[in-house]
Length: 131
Image (cartoon, rainbow, N blue to C red; front, side):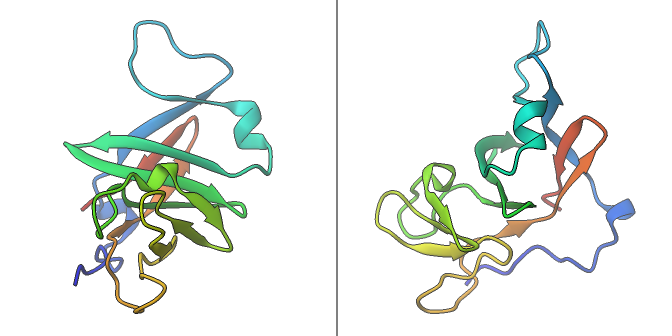
């Protein structure tokens, strides 16, 4: 069983990683992901896969909230950012395992199998903490 990230750590004591920038156009000479401001301003869901300190993380916006989970499904390593998001859950595209976006709990056996991470928006950045 995988425990969720310790959420008792205060936000100011976490190490935050910028995983994307919010802008009207991608910045030149950078490999950092850019999320269009128009997409942030809309109500549409967002899913993206990012790399943080050699770790694959799936970042989602669903129902107006931001979530981040370990990006590789704990069942057989499927890419969760490519899964279907509905009703607060993501379904792995490989074998259909479902995880709660907020907690990482696997929906059938109710075990916390996907590590979850805090997400925040700061000015023009989307940041997560994997501490």
